[in-house]
Amino acid sequence: MSTPTDQAVIITLQHQLTAARASGDRVAECETLGSLGIVYYQGEQWQEAIATCTDYLNLAKKLGHQWQEGIAYYYLGYTYRAIGELAQAVDAFCAAYLLSRQLGNQDVFLPVWEQLNESVEVYLSKRVSASLSSYPMAIGNCPKMG
Image (tube, rainbow, N blue to C red; front, side, top):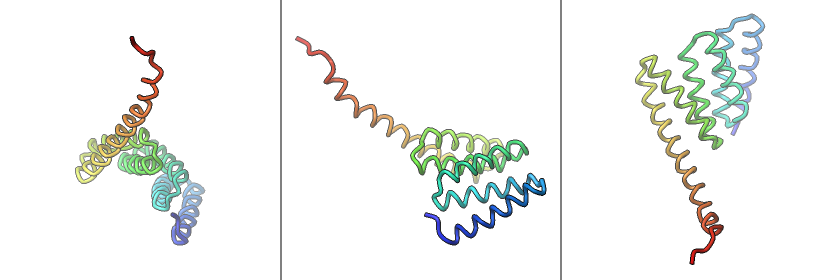
């Protein structure tokens, strides 16, 4: 949940973002979007986190900043997982993992690999559980033999 301190940081970052955009400083804009997305995530402002991290990701791609692109994917993965959107979480963590491997940063790609595996396990267990819960209904609809 967002605290008054979080709100003060958000307001400050929004002002910095406006200034970066007004001055045309795309690097500062990208860095500020990243910081703002993380604060939204930490404050459990999920929709704002997704929108801001997506903007961060898109700008990082345009600028060719793969490191920031990986961070955006990482926080998108966490945010999607927090709201139960597991397929999107897996996609985001997978992209973050591939980028961190490509950049050769073992300190980053091992934790991302762990998050990816955890998200896949949860995703698969929910899919199997959902499939099994519909199984008795399917059997009940089968014609009786004999």
